[in-house]
Length: 468
Ligand SMILES: Cc1cc2nc3c(=O)[nH]c(=O)nc-3n(C[C@H](O)[C@H](O)[C@H](O)COP(=O)(O)OP(=O)(O)OC[C@H]3O[C@@H](n4cnc5c(N)ncnc54)[C@H](O)[C@@H]3O)c2cc1C
Image (spheres, protein in one colour):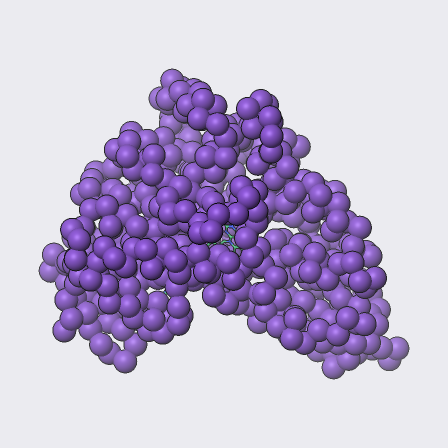
């Protein structure tokens, strides 16, 4: 049996942040195993549709504080292949620190305690032992399948297959108005094509023009992300989701379709919104059930009972979403023997898996995770209960844990966090935002904990301090 000082499952942004943090604590030459079922580093970015782009400025999507090489202009939104390339380069830079064994194309079927360490079983039955393990499956994004449609007269496809299968002459139905739907409309726009958006209750996006402004606005009124999160989080008391969500909608979001009831952390600029609005022929505010072949040609059947005729040959692109749709494995943040840290949405520390991994890994290696009263939150279970409450609870949880982490972590760990979106803003503004939260911390912590307790009791989801 191979034996390691550390075994990390997952080479997406969550796993690579764990590896970055490990390099701050483990000695040079420590024996580390990195295992991923994909054939190369980068997680979902190795397989995402070819027109995917980052929706935030690229520099804050990284491992630790590793810089993008070569640098792009600050507001550049990197393409999917560039994101994969950057994550691969992060791994290349971290390799030097360790005696690293990479198991790409291998799946961890079991990761469990063994004495005071960890035991991992890989596909094929190979067993490896480790003093510590980080199970960083993170969001564990899988490509979606085409929608199963009864009609033989239409084409059902996915964003991953669109470029290969697409015929520009056919009308397109984009099914789903989230980030993937918006990327797909932008990809198809500008060729005089009929594009219809099946939009359900509609999706809101954070307004990138406001939240990542350029020029003097960075010094003036644009809100820092910490400020915006606090502003929305403290308006929610665990019961008033309509009112608190409405405030969030009015203050921080935009939507190409003029409104929406859903939000899943997507970001759009005002220019992108306008371009999408211009490109779409029609928005259908309902949910697609099926497309059937009627006597006069194919017909869409909607969940609300309405029917809409469709031109034969129309293309239906499944953009109904990749994130948090399946519950995934339930694992505690920290195993009973303290040797296994798990970064999963079922026991999330922050709404971004990258930040969950970065911060929890620091506490794990410091040996203080067990006594730090971080709240863990079952994100997929909460999402299934209702989108507005899900999002507002997510903000409360992220804000509360950020305050707990600020107390628990050394300054160096906080300063080295290149994932912090507030790095977009000048240092004096960041210091002022931190000073405000520090001054009111006791009150904010109590408020968020009370809200999350209400959410837990009302919705019956796991949401509590992990074991601090
Ligand atoms: C279409 C789309 C666009 C997105 N765009 C953005 C964006 O612009 N900005 C942003 O911040 N976020 C975006 N996200 C969210 C995105 O998923 C995360 O930002 C991030 O890349 C997820 O990283 P991760 O490490 O959590 O998960 P993944 O990227 O899914 O990586 C997890 C890795 O762990 C491996 N793994 C899991 N379990 C095992 C196992 N048992 N054995 C072996 N290997 C295992 C998987 O193979 C995978 O490679 C987007 C998501 C989607 C779906």
